[in-house]
Length: 91
Image 1 (tube, rainbow, N blue to C red):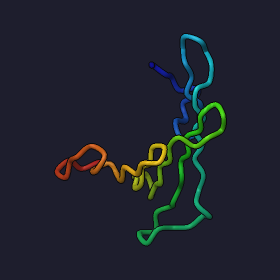
Image 2: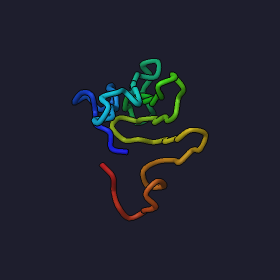
Image 3: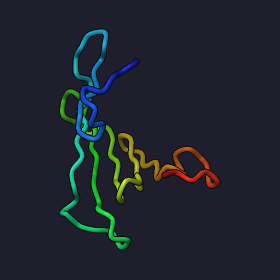
């Protein structure tokens, strides 16, 4: 299935089926209690909701780096673990 973003703000948008023009997922990103991490970077949480309002994915952010990725009930980890690379630097 090919989806498109509803807005240019990919952290707060909808994912739309271009064929039917129906919203498939809602994406919302919020700060976590305005806390800062030990490195003084802001902490945020992105949640992806299906059409019934159930959370189907979560991303924990430290600054602009995703630190904790979960899809449904499976925790994937960070980008290094997700893509299986310890030599590629993600920025």
